Amino acid sequence: QVRLQESGPGLVKPSRALSVICTVSGASISTPTLDWAWIRQSPGKGLEWIGVVRTYDGSSDLATSLKSRASISMDTPKSQFSLRLTNVTPQDTAVYYCASVRLGYPEIWGQGILVTVSS
Image (spheres, rainbow, N blue to C red):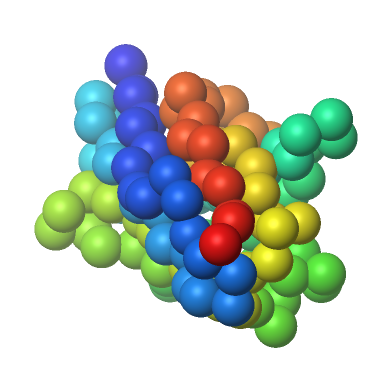
């Protein structure tokens, strides 16, 4: 069974970069039928799709609103994929979730990690 676990700092200062890692177990991160995504939920708001990294070629598709600041990459030997978000503001405070994606839909989710942007 696929399991995902997020890790990273819980507190980031404004204008710095936020980096979170998702470790995949129970399946190969190179499984061709799966892609890997990041999704977040800010306090009091709904889920926001950040982007997905394609297993096929390592390319990523990012939400238009975050494209200038976000990047998603895979580290296949470590069975990890990561999100980096630059120049963060308090509005980037959220629970960040990683998820497996099958046929374009999130399938298995990690438990989430709260990242707070504050000085």
